[in-house]
Structures are given as C-alpha cells and as structure tokens.
Image (tube, chains in turn green, purple):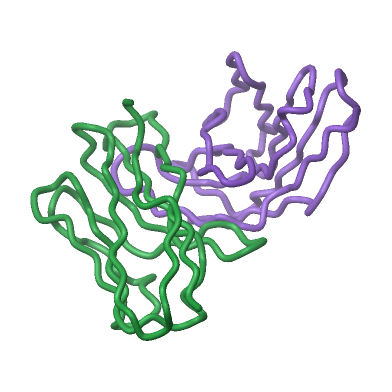
Length: 114
Length: 111
C-alpha cells in the first residue's frame, strides 16, 4: 500500500534482549518521526530524521535507544538490553516536508518485554 | 509547540453531532491546529487542520475561534465507527513538525 508500514506488528522479548523495529515511510517523504506510546497515553516524541540526518533525538529516553535511517528512506529503531519499562507501542510517522500536509502514521509495533 | 487542553472523555448518541472542544491559548501565529484520531490498535489518523478559517472535509468540520485560542471538531453524524481517541495538536505547517500529543478525548458513540 501507499501508507507508512511498520514491522513487526507485535514483538515479545525477554528482558535484556536487543530488539529492532522497522519503519517504511511513504515513498519520497523527507521527514520521519518515531514516537513511543504507553498504555492510555498519547504518543510521545522520540526522534526526528530529515532524509538520512537525525536532527533531533531529544526524546530518546536513554542511550539504549538508537535510531538510524542510512539511505533516507527505511528507518530502524533499536533498543538494547531491553527493560520492562520499554514495553509500549512504537509509532513511526512520515511527512512530505511540504506546507499544508499532515504527518502520516503507521499502525505501530507493540513491544512487550517479559 | 503550544500545548492543548481537551476533556478526557465524551459521549455522543449515534446519528447526532459530536462536538469536541480544544483549548490552545498559547498558539503562535504560524501554528496550525491539527486533529487526529486513534482507533484501538491503529496509528493516529489525520482528520483535518486549519490556521484561522473554518475548514470542512468529508470527515469533519473544524471551527476555530477568532482569537485562535480554542477550536471545535465537529463530526456531523456520529457513527459507532467514530468511537476513538481524538487528539488536538498545534504545529507549524510543513518542515519539521515536532508535535506534542496530550491524552486526547476518548469519544464513545452510543447506539
């Protein structure tokens, strides 16, 4: 389809394991955002890419969180040494960078840390 | 980005208009009001946005007060499928839109 695609939709990992979450943005979209959404809360900003450049990573909660977008399209959010508090839905959004356009969101990856 | 305030929950009878309010008293002159909704297990879905004029599309209408400090999203004939969390956010248009979501309004459409 033409929307933002995220994989996997669900991920279960044991505490201490590393995980990688993938985002395929809408083709041609310059901007890419990662958000974390805890149960019952709104999405919270994690990081922002403009093409391959990570311009804002102020929302990443710790140095265990790492995001990349090496070719300016697909992005991966990696969480090392996962902890139970990392359990959340991780949302990706892309934006064309043009005026008068909204962000387009994927359906997220639900991460559960046991 | 400016912050927004929304009621945590609202009910609406099926077939009636749902009017969802949002306060954004610290909005800047170049910030737009965007509305998204999130149905369970899905990502936020864009509904509508506006700067200062009222806007209407196939999903909803957006009424922005003259001072731009508040707005109302109107779903003219609510259906059960409109049950969702509705988020009002303010952001610049285009470019780097770092946005802040609150907890939104949980709209329950009642049969």
